[in-house]
Image (cartoon, rainbow, N blue to C red; front, side, top):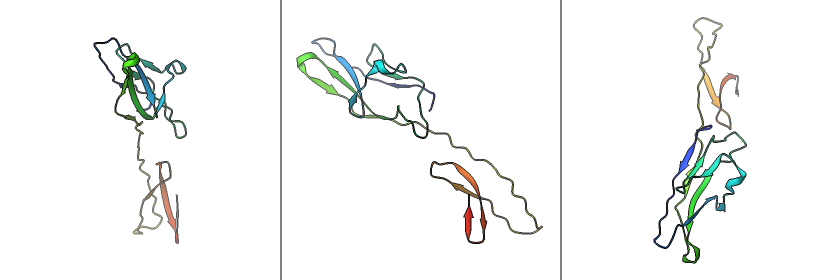
Length: 129
Protein backbone atom coordinates (compact mmCIF):
# COMPACT_ATOMS: atom_id res chain seq x y z
CA UNK A 1 0.00 0.00 0.00
CA UNK A 2 1.29 3.48 -0.83
CA UNK A 3 3.12 5.00 2.15
CA UNK A 4 3.60 1.59 3.79
CA UNK A 5 6.70 -0.55 4.19
CA UNK A 6 7.83 -3.74 2.44
CA UNK A 7 10.25 -6.31 3.86
CA UNK A 8 11.82 -8.79 1.43
CA UNK A 9 13.59 -11.57 3.32
CA UNK A 10 16.90 -13.04 2.22
CA UNK A 11 19.37 -15.27 4.03
CA UNK A 12 22.36 -17.33 2.95
CA UNK A 13 24.76 -19.53 4.92
CA UNK A 14 28.04 -21.22 4.11
CA UNK A 15 30.70 -23.16 5.98
CA UNK A 16 33.33 -21.30 3.90
CA UNK A 17 32.57 -17.83 5.23
CA UNK A 18 29.92 -15.14 5.28
CA UNK A 19 28.23 -14.62 1.89
CA UNK A 20 27.93 -11.11 0.46
CA UNK A 21 24.29 -10.28 -0.27
CA UNK A 22 23.20 -7.86 -2.98
CA UNK A 23 19.72 -7.00 -4.22
CA UNK A 24 18.55 -6.68 -7.82
CA UNK A 25 15.50 -4.84 -9.13
CA UNK A 26 14.36 -5.66 -12.65
CA UNK A 27 17.69 -7.42 -13.23
CA UNK A 28 19.91 -4.50 -12.19
CA UNK A 29 21.93 -4.26 -8.96
CA UNK A 30 20.24 -1.85 -6.53
CA UNK A 31 22.36 1.14 -5.52
CA UNK A 32 21.10 1.26 -1.94
CA UNK A 33 23.04 4.42 -1.06
CA UNK A 34 21.07 6.40 -3.66
CA UNK A 35 17.69 6.05 -1.88
CA UNK A 36 17.37 6.49 1.89
CA UNK A 37 14.03 4.66 1.86
CA UNK A 38 15.70 1.38 0.81
CA UNK A 39 18.12 -0.35 3.15
CA UNK A 40 19.64 -3.77 3.47
CA UNK A 41 19.32 -5.10 7.02
CA UNK A 42 22.19 -6.93 8.78
CA UNK A 43 20.48 -10.29 8.10
CA UNK A 44 20.43 -9.56 4.33
CA UNK A 45 16.74 -8.65 4.04
CA UNK A 46 15.67 -5.57 2.07
CA UNK A 47 13.45 -2.97 3.74
CA UNK A 48 11.64 -0.45 1.56
CA UNK A 49 10.04 2.31 3.63
CA UNK A 50 7.33 4.80 2.67
CA UNK A 51 6.37 3.15 -0.63
CA UNK A 52 6.00 5.71 -3.44
CA UNK A 53 3.23 5.35 -6.00
CA UNK A 54 1.38 7.75 -8.27
CA UNK A 55 -0.18 7.54 -11.69
CA UNK A 56 3.08 8.19 -13.56
CA UNK A 57 5.71 7.50 -10.87
CA UNK A 58 6.03 3.95 -9.51
CA UNK A 59 9.69 3.64 -8.50
CA UNK A 60 9.20 0.84 -5.97
CA UNK A 61 7.23 -1.54 -8.17
CA UNK A 62 9.24 -4.21 -9.91
CA UNK A 63 10.85 -7.64 -9.79
CA UNK A 64 13.29 -8.08 -6.90
CA UNK A 65 15.91 -10.78 -6.37
CA UNK A 66 18.46 -11.48 -3.67
CA UNK A 67 21.95 -12.55 -4.80
CA UNK A 68 24.41 -14.20 -2.41
CA UNK A 69 28.04 -14.63 -3.44
CA UNK A 70 31.08 -16.12 -1.76
CA UNK A 71 34.35 -15.08 -3.37
CA UNK A 72 35.49 -17.53 -6.04
CA UNK A 73 32.99 -20.16 -4.83
CA UNK A 74 30.32 -18.50 -6.97
CA UNK A 75 26.93 -16.97 -6.38
CA UNK A 76 23.30 -17.96 -6.16
CA UNK A 77 20.22 -15.87 -6.90
CA UNK A 78 16.76 -16.15 -5.41
CA UNK A 79 13.47 -16.56 -7.16
CA UNK A 80 11.72 -13.36 -8.21
CA UNK A 81 9.61 -11.42 -5.72
CA UNK A 82 7.17 -9.09 -7.46
CA UNK A 83 6.36 -5.85 -5.66
CA UNK A 84 3.10 -4.24 -6.80
CA UNK A 85 1.43 -1.36 -4.98
CA UNK A 86 -2.25 -1.75 -4.13
CA UNK A 87 -4.55 1.14 -5.00
CA UNK A 88 -7.61 2.42 -3.18
CA UNK A 89 -10.97 2.11 -4.89
CA UNK A 90 -13.97 4.15 -3.80
CA UNK A 91 -17.50 4.56 -5.06
CA UNK A 92 -19.61 7.67 -4.57
CA UNK A 93 -23.39 7.66 -4.59
CA UNK A 94 -24.90 10.31 -6.79
CA UNK A 95 -28.46 11.53 -6.28
CA UNK A 96 -30.44 11.81 -9.49
CA UNK A 97 -33.29 14.31 -9.56
CA UNK A 98 -36.29 13.21 -11.60
CA UNK A 99 -38.06 16.13 -13.22
CA UNK A 100 -41.31 14.39 -14.13
CA UNK A 101 -42.99 12.20 -11.49
CA UNK A 102 -43.22 8.59 -12.65
CA UNK A 103 -40.49 9.03 -15.28
CA UNK A 104 -37.84 6.34 -15.55
CA UNK A 105 -34.30 7.20 -14.50
CA UNK A 106 -31.12 5.14 -14.66
CA UNK A 107 -27.99 6.02 -12.74
CA UNK A 108 -25.00 5.29 -14.96
CA UNK A 109 -21.47 4.94 -13.63
CA UNK A 110 -18.52 4.86 -16.02
CA UNK A 111 -14.84 4.17 -15.44
CA UNK A 112 -12.09 6.13 -17.16
CA UNK A 113 -8.71 4.77 -18.30
CA UNK A 114 -7.06 5.13 -14.88
CA UNK A 115 -9.82 3.38 -12.96
CA UNK A 116 -11.71 6.42 -11.66
CA UNK A 117 -15.47 5.96 -11.45
CA UNK A 118 -17.51 8.83 -12.86
CA UNK A 119 -21.23 9.59 -13.11
CA UNK A 120 -22.58 9.43 -16.64
CA UNK A 121 -25.78 10.45 -18.34
CA UNK A 122 -27.34 9.53 -21.63
CA UNK A 123 -28.71 12.12 -24.01
CA UNK A 124 -30.25 10.70 -27.16
CA UNK A 125 -27.70 8.24 -28.57
CA UNK A 126 -24.64 9.56 -26.71
CA UNK A 127 -23.24 8.69 -23.29
CA UNK A 128 -21.51 11.53 -21.41
CA UNK A 129 -19.19 10.89 -18.45
